[in-house]
Length: 256
Image (cartoon, rainbow, N blue to C red; front, side):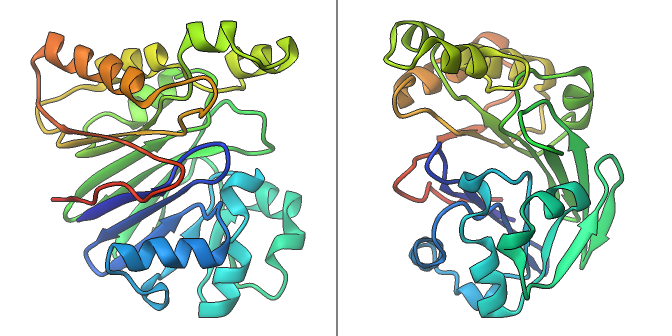
């Protein structure tokens, strides 16, 4: 299994997962050219990607998806409401629809899309299961519901949102209505929220944690890392590799 955050932040998000005989992109929020460049940087040719899996319709998650899908004749996997909301981006593209809350199989993996709270039409997180282990993905969510916590139990790798430092957001330059949106049930998890979620789903088999969707304005990578690392050290349950995503560079590749 290989996992890499190709891009993470408000300007574009994309995650690469290779497991068994399948190579997936989860979201493609950069230009197709830039996604291909970052794939190449980790030794992956764009033509090797089997499908693009979409979490929701915001531009920072779908910008390059249609172009990549058409270029390499690969399917886009997304829910029907998300497809209808962003249909213009997926013209002349093979679309495979799924329903939030219902797991489905694609090639040799199981994909379980579960509902999350975010200001999109049908936002989902994912649990991706293979013979090599389970990857849980929960970004772009305002709160970690009981369902989110239940779904992420037992994952070997986690990709968790750690969007903002609460003090930086409060004292930062954003207008008040935007601060309220970020802090709301349909916004984004703070560093402390992310650490609290991590605390509830820790287990001895957890081997990797990626911190994702960091705000460039309202967060600092070291603050996000420290919040998660402090929690991990205090619990002494496991010692996963902790990787902070970046907007402008692909992350380290976690190989298991």
